[in-house]
Length: 182
Image 1 (tube, rainbow, N blue to C red):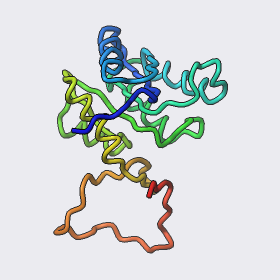
Image 2: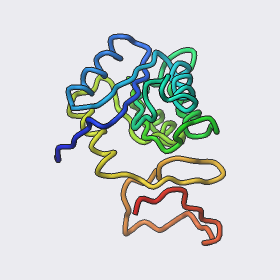
Image 3: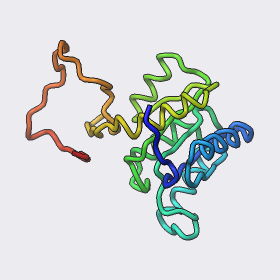
């Protein structure tokens, strides 16, 4: 695994459990993370992101490069935050990598996150290696974003399959590339 310098990253950690929030922040710093901001729930994170868009000086940061969010929080949980980040006109960056952290890593929950536009999922309890693996995946395997009537987010297909037949059929005039880093 390659070694990367994460010191320039601004990370937002959204976690309702103070201990877990502190632990994730400490681990990110240990991995070389730059500036780590925290929020106690999705509502607090939305307010911070709004403030960042309106007044970066007051927010203390001009952009967020990665969001780590717990799934289960009240009153605004991780899925509501993810929907706001991907769909709201007030969102400062609809393309920001979003890593959902959850103690429930069953296929159904991962599918829900994927369908809402999550970039990666991280299951609790996580190790330093699994955390580093998610960060490395963001750098080594970035995905294009897809916009359809029902979905906006990273392409849900992980790897191309030469045997698989393309099931999506669109006319070239219907395709709109939102972001392409090539």
